[in-house]
Amino acid sequence: FGPTIMAAFTVAGRFEQLIQQPFNSLGAALATYTGQNMGANNIERIKKGFWSATKISVIFSLLMLPVARFGGEGIMSLFTHEADVIREGAKGIRITCFFYSALGMIYVTRNVLNGAGDVKFAMLSGIVEVVGRVGLAKPLTFVPGIGMMSIWFTTGLTWLLTAVISCIRYAGGKWKTKGIIKAHIDLSEDTERGRNIELEFNKDIASTPGIQIGQILNEETTRVEETKIVYSLKHEGIS
Image 1 (cartoon, rainbow, N blue to C red):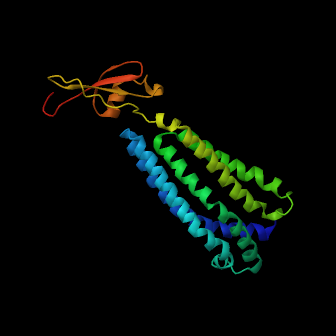
Image 2: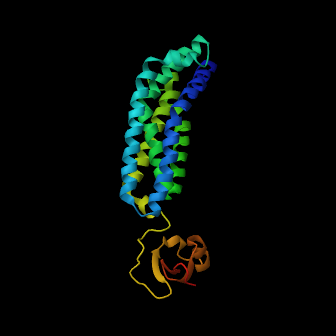
Image 3: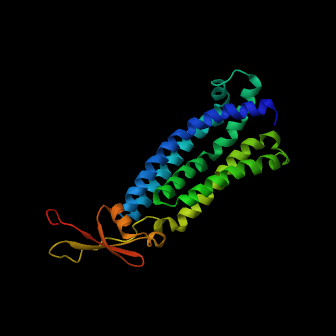
C-alpha cells in the first residue's frame, strides 16, 4: 500500500480508537448487566437492556457520522502535519464513518453474549474479524474505483460482517441457555430444619462433584441427579 497510505491508516486508527471508547464502556456495562440478569433468570430485562444499548450505540454513530464525513482533514491534522497523510486519511475516515453503527453493534452483541456465558461464540466472532481484515484487503484493491482505499473498505466491511454474524447469534437465542443456573428456584417444600431447593444446571457441569457445586453455591449440597442439584438451604440459627 505504500508508506503514505500506511501512515494515513495508522493516524486514522487513532481517531477510530476514540470513537470506540464509548462503545467499549457501553459494552463493559452491558456485560455486567447481562450477567446479573442471567443469574436472576430475567431474560426479558436483558432484552430490554440490549435494545436500549442498541439505541444509544446507533444515536452516537449517527452523531459521529457528519463529524467524520465533513471534518476529516481537521481530525487528521490533530495527529499529523503531513499533507499527503492528512489527505489520504481523511478519505479513509469518510469511508469508515458509514460503518460506525455496525462497529457499535459488535460491542453490544458481543458483550451481551459474553455476559450470558456464550464466550466461545464471542471468541469466534473476534477471529472472524481478524480473518476479514486480512482476507479482504488485497482482493479489494482489484475492484475498480477502490484501489488503495481497500484498506478502509476492508475495515468497514469487516465490522459489518462481524456485526451481522453476532446479531444472528443473539437472535437465535442460544445464549439464553448458557448460564450456570437455568431454572427458577422452587421453595414450595419447607421442612423443620431447612428448605429443599432445586436448581437445574447445564448438562456440561451436571457431572461436577456435589461438594464443588456446593462451594459454588456456598451451600451444602445433599445429592446430585442427572442435570439437577438438590441442596439444603439452612435457615438462620438452624444447624
